[in-house]
Length: 436
Image (cartoon, rainbow, N blue to C red; front, side):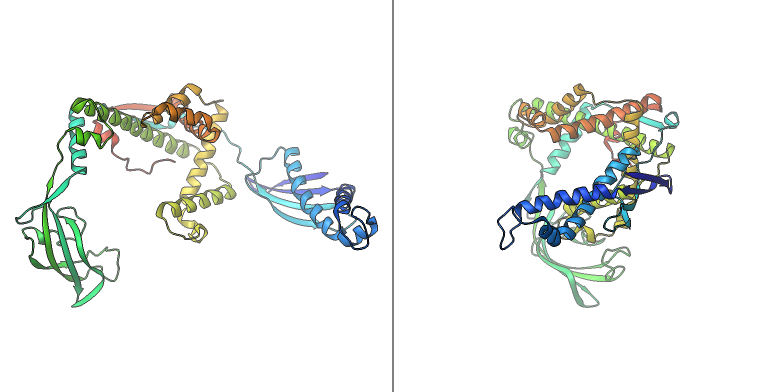
């Protein structure tokens, strides 16, 4: 087999492959012999059909199948021979494809870029330091109580924080508009759910009262037909309900799976969850800075094939996230290209750090991570056993640990400063996009 390779760009290769005619004919004859053993032709017993008849009937199709198979097999033989690492399927252009002659074709494809990760010392990372205080736990208990607020009907004027049950009809220039009417709608005053002026106009209203609210749709309203327009809403208040915070008692604790230990046991469980959230938030922000730093310090040309594959994955994820029966391929590729390119670049950089520093997943850390995830379940031992019985799930955890070890490796060389902050600041989402 003859192979020649032309470098057409830093990551594109144009490879010419020649497969000898003898190899083609040998494979065609094998295929015809296999066909002869099972061919059913009138007048002949199975396996007794003369080869000249088999060849006359089946040679053309057998040759086409052989040529297709040889292109595929010889391509992979050639890239192994030339020590190339394709990043995607090749584009194949036949050059010589005639009976009795050698098969010759040109395969154009991208390869994985070859590079070394550099500039780790230039990466600046601010590592947050925080702890969960008693006041933080108190604040979290208040949040949990508010999230489980009940509303009880009252006979008084509505105040901010009350939940009203309302009917309303909206009009613009005296005409009812689509989506501007509803019956039996619950609305918490002060929630900001409605356009400016709507909720404010219902403060002081009582059950059975009717009000007409004059409001203006914001200029940036999502419905462009209504943006910036004045409107009137005729509102009927069906009921007014005041918020009632639940007591910190056993019934409330049971909502969160805490069935013993009373208030102190519940506080301990809340603190444990907050500390886990704090560790994850700090780890995530450090990882984001490390990944941003790797990208800034290393320019990596990415194969289009890999970006295209990642775009397709993001399309599928988007459809799954937002529901519906849309074909993922109908979503424009440009919506995902920037994110896909970033993810591919990071994947290549992380893989190179693993290779460059000879990093292997620490099995003790793998076990610790699985146990930490399992701790959120009622029977953690079963969860741990499940992971160790499922090779694919276990490999996914190993990948997470491997990535954490990459971050640790970069931190050893990066410019790291520690900053003491409150729990709230530490868990607050970062302003910059998080790395995948």
